[in-house]
Length: 268
Image (tube, rainbow, N blue to C red; front, side, top):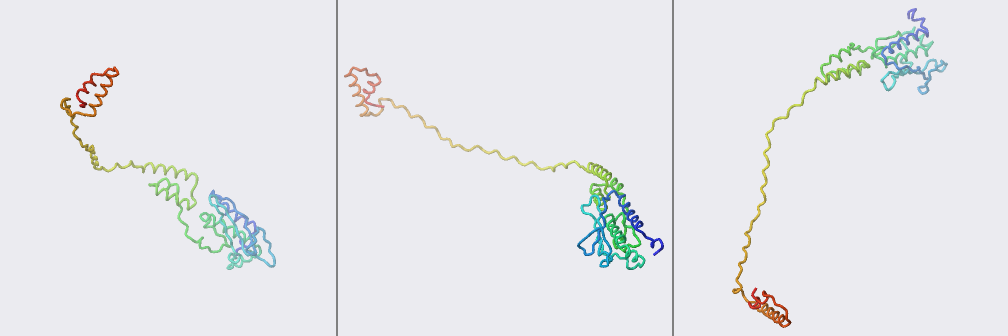
């Protein structure tokens, strides 16, 4: 360990953490960090830890970092045996003398990196362990404003906006620019509705014929038979004669029609 590293103090550790927090605050999405907690049994956690003969070092430590727009905090739980810099005797001495300060700072930095990996990926401290995630290649920065402004189609613009969400690059001004560009592309992409295909007119339905009505010839009127040729009706003739006789007996007048019928012998 160099002379500068040998004289590491609590103030140096606090300054390093302050540098980390300053970087993440610049993203505009920093929402606080909870106090680092320690445990000797994995059950009881407390931000206060005191070295004892039974527990010269804590079993594990954990830290939580909150980010705006993320429902759950980024939490890192680190075991002492996994974080202890076994390959560096100088750092082993410092960690053993002040486990709460060094181990706590290490855990807090891990939580900050977990929450803001794109902002802290290149930051490494002398006591950091090799991390495959930190060694991953850093993607080239993208000009989100330019990509939004030059998107040629609605689908391309939505793809850029989706990538911006994954990269946590969405901001208020960019959302305004995105909505304006989306409206512009949607307006230019509009096409008039296609004219319907020409179809042959359907033949008109045949006019139904009226129902056939069977016409029957009217019954010819019965010819009138002269009275002299009509058959006699004895019963009617007798009734008429009796009626005339009764009327004359009692002095009642007898109409001409009745007398004529009586004389005709009851012909209808």
